Length: 380
Ligand code: FE2
Image 1 (cartoon, rainbow, N blue to C red):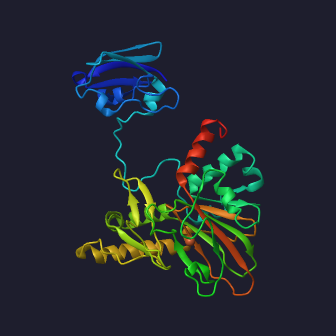
Image 2: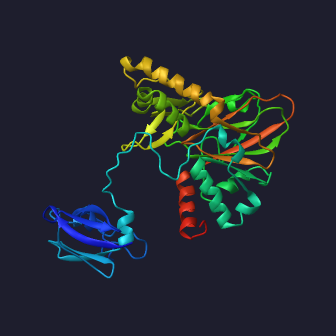
Image 3: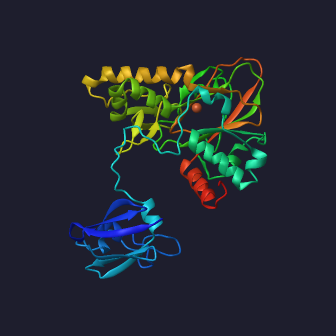
């Protein structure tokens, strides 16, 4: 990375500099705040040692020079000289001219439809549990596709928690550390019957929602009961392409969800069906007909169009061209990014046995482990 031609602009309130010939501007306050010297950042843990209030509001760049590939800046009124690493600055440049379309996602995310059917992202427990690089490859698939299968896991009750512990921690809820998914008499949740379940994200009535779900198969001798996954981000993209105003309505107004199916539990949330960040990044989808409460946050004049968009969103979710289907065998499990990928189940016969266990975990832990493995160079 060649850094060259630093030029103080705007009376010292900003700097223009080129990386391999590409010019970028940085503000003086931003540069001062992001100094990497040992008075500003702890060399041990990288944490910032100063606050924004320690930086004078009138901070200016008084001098800028490059020697031996390093740029140094002198800030006034502190009289402080700071050196900058060119690669770090280039990687953190923010002077971009491109505007992002609402619903954009990061390049590491790949949306998919039923064509992924022949390449279901998969790993195997004997490999992933002992080989850190194999674990990294499996986690990478989860980040890219929002789901992955794992084969050859132990078929003991509760062993799905060991999979969560490969990258993080189980998130315990009122359903327990893990929960059983099998047909029951008088179930407190329709998941515990042999009915088919429409594609959904789990527990949208929590805030935050569980960001990962693992469903592990211990027994499956029924006819049917296949698992289905649908990429909610792909569905959102299709909805936006054919009905931009409907897409906007589902992002702009909140839906409500509730779970009140057990004594002492009244879980309620208010969040959009399609959630965008302030810069339009697609953050999450929530969709669950069983736990949708009355929607009361859409103005009267928008409600009809909101419902039309909601219906179309549901139709696209049900469209077979969007789904990937597989039938879990004992010892197999799948993990879903519950902020993105919906899961469903086909109905199954009342003869034979189907016993699944589910648990939740946190995506930030998964992404952290993946980032650490990437930094160790094990995936290159
Ligand atoms: Fe579910």
